[in-house]
Amino acid sequence: MKKSILFGIVGIVALLLVFNYLMPSCLRNQEDKILNLENVIDNLKEESNPIVFKITEKTEGTISYKVMFLDEDGNKINTIEEKIDGNELFFDFFSVKVNDKYIAFPDKIFTDAVPAANGNDLKELYNKDGFPMVFYSEKITDESKAALSDLFTKIKDPNQEIKEQFGSVVHDMHGIKSFEPGYTYKIIVHTKGGIEIIED
Image 1 (tube, rainbow, N blue to C red):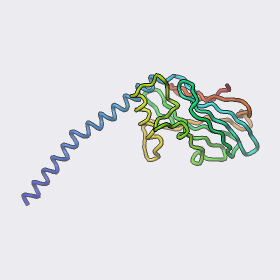
Image 2: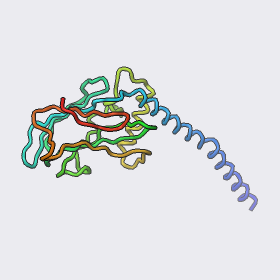
Image 3: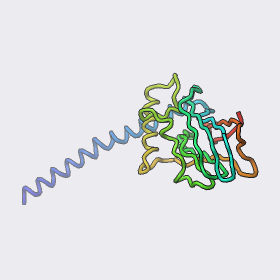
Image 4: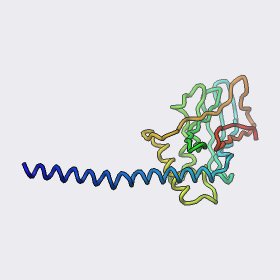
């Protein structure tokens, strides 16, 4: 009986040690990551252009497109050419709010005929060793790269919950204002909020 009580006391003491020493360490680690993200977004351009695209062909029911991904310095990362069913093209971004600003990751391409869940996933097209290259710049610090890589890893994991995250969609409207074949368009992301498409 005394041994059981002794083991129980030892167990409680061990739990208290874990709570008192490990929990504050985890909280500090989380606070450091938030602070790093605040520093990251303060150093991002207020207006960036991660995607340039062109509609190469449009028929009734299908859209062929070419998409180029750019880093913060305007250098090409990757290019894809694909065809998708539908008449209206949608670009979905995964946005995360940090204080009063936003970090937006290109997420998917889908249409009025192809739902977002079945859309073309874009994340691996600008992924390099776990880092989202659309945020790369020659001026980026190691701390910023680590913070963005950590956030990008969470975004790619469907089981992760991220505070202050939501989807942002930009698209054309068939019959009202459509993306015209042969024209080049830029997707502009504003850290103060908002994503827009402009003709190049």
